[in-house]
Image (cartoon, helix red, strand yellow):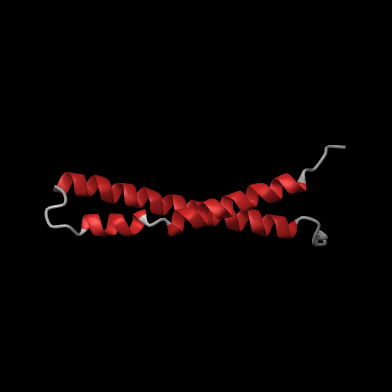
Length: 86
């Protein structure tokens, strides 16, 4: 039988949560908001580039949210009695 290292999985999950907390709380986000409000901050092409990167970050966050949902829902389902076939 394979050894199931639940403590390692527990640590992995806690590490992900802590990384996300740090990312969200990072003061550089406030600095970025201050930078982009400066008059003459950028040209239209550079603005499009920055906006595109912000779009990608938003998509990645949404993907993380969906992945978390699948992990939690799937974990909840493990060990449940399968529904009776009709």
